Length: 248
View 1 (tube, rainbow, N blue to C red):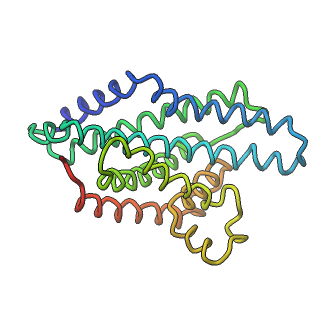
View 2 (view 1 turned 120 degrees about the vertical axis):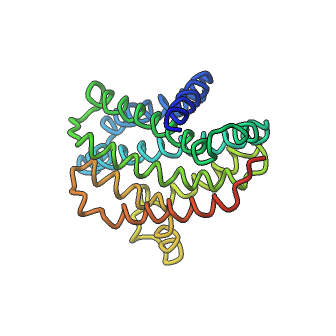
View 3 (view 1 turned 90 degrees about the vertical axis):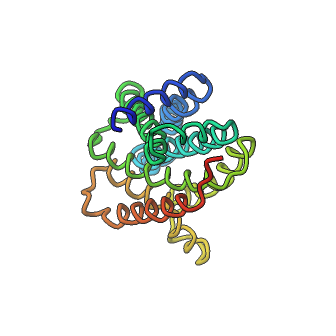
């Protein structure tokens, strides 16, 4: 079973990389945003403290969340295409268990997420305007936890999206507004009470807090609440997706 999982995961990675536009959008575009925006902020006429905050915390956290969202939107689209084309039905008829098939999709996205993160770190050493000293292993773990949790939300969306044509627009309509309520652009404490409650129910809020904190070098003990919230999101979304997921 494990051998079948790895083979299917590798197959999903190769299928994804055969589409140049999708590979660029998911792997290279976040890195490009990271470098170009970093150099723009470093040359903009903004207060030094504000520029340092953006370059050292906000922008890396934003790009990390962008990596996770790209993985989720890609997953939603692929699952919808597979269902509409009858591929899921044929895969379910194989000796592989349904959990193995779905896990292969998740592992493929997590592998591509790690590649994108590695490219971002390498680019920062060469092109980023300020020195970056990141605990790489801790940040990689934080990014994987965040991506895994948000991927479960993607599976829930993929479970109810009717056709491949509407998969990415529906996914974007759900996920990108969440980006505006995660604390990256507007401090949570300055939000009105209703929006503040929505922000606290938003999994991206905890992903941003975790990623930004680990990027700055904060201890994991300071973010146990973020990790717990992301684990709860994963458990709830996975349970719901298992109940409503349609193979055909």
